[in-house]
Image (tube, rainbow over all chains, first blue to last red):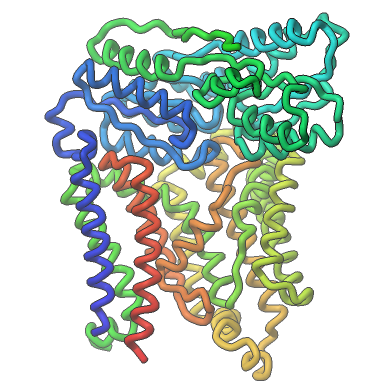
Length: 316
Length: 315
């Protein structure tokens, strides 16, 4: 009976796969892909961040309206560039008609953009810009960038902080993953807005890697070292929401002006409840929708501008 | 040895291979994009990094240990390599430095386990954090990128139509298989995992072997970092997060017992291929990212279940 377990295992994997093949997702059956017209692939950084889930929703709406098939695939971890690269390589094998990509790494993902170029698959970048120098050095090409002006968003956040603090304050900053263009641009913009206000000093600026739990612990530590901090700018809402919990745990709710970025539902609710002072609204659903619409236009042979801004606003 | 007898003698490995073949068969029925030369080469390339790390883990697990630090060691060795290359070191020298860093980290693990009497889980858990912190420290948290074409050849080059990284993987497996089967050191590894006390009493230099085993594990993680850095044209200090779990999964799917003493290098290669093919296939089928995680987890459980059920039936 030695092979019984082997057969059992084979049967399990078979049924699992067969189950996947029957998934209600229209994109799941590869056989019908050719018949259904163009297949557009969206590869966000991850699908466990509400920002990218909103982006996916917007993209799905646009795909439905245009009658094209949309495939959405993402790595488990936002930082796993290698996995994102594998997903794109696999989509190239599947011969998708266009690729919409939110790069996990501005420089690291460039080699696979080149592979898509070689396979004649147009690449549209959303949310996070590729590193221009790295792209140029490799000879890679992208059609367009669709995203918010993060630098401008950071500036708006900074101006709001100056206003709210009345020119006097001790400010902490929670950064995203070091070396990520998106986070860097937001923090740069924020710092710029604070320049020329000598009464406001940045007492701490630490990365919390975009994550909520790290936002909690890092800000808890900042509070230990600088108990008089009275304002916080977090480069995304997840970190801001983590910090809000740390502030509550320290019994300082209301004493720290918390400004986030992304305007996720939970952050909007926190602003309403007075736990956060403001958040910067990006519009990920609009990004997803615009990206798919532009990809469809591109496949029809229509021209697409090289840089498409998506509106940004302060929610307070 | 006749074929049926060979199959019985290597039933567990034959089982892994059978699973792999069934998986490929099912995928080639479900999608026309799977069974193409370019996709198969694609899967092979995607398997390389996990497979190279997993060889080292196979030795460690065969000896009854575990190494949780390989992902972090990969990151540290990778950034050392990248910084050396950017400082203008010749490619072979930079790769040498990278391998030395990896092997040194492994040696520390080995010393802690063999002479410090720390459980491998704890020693390598500690080094996991130390190496990660080290990688972040030397790079200030930023990726180091942009290398010469001569270095990138390790990722982009081809020899006889097969990508260079795949050749590297095959070479590593060839040597690792030979060492395990044909050298004294290889037999010691299995003996220590089978029964450490008996090995010690029969004159096996257990402590020295353990240091060697963990050094090998660290060195192979560094070797994987060379290939990863070439592939991404960039070394990230946060690279390799949870790669140790993928490598452990490949080893276990390949039939190596977590209790030590039983397993094979060849099985691990097939285990890594199963994981690579599964991820590739699920991408090709356009399966939701959430479902993919469920499927991969289920396959790991099924593979280990297969192992225990099989061992139960042998008794």
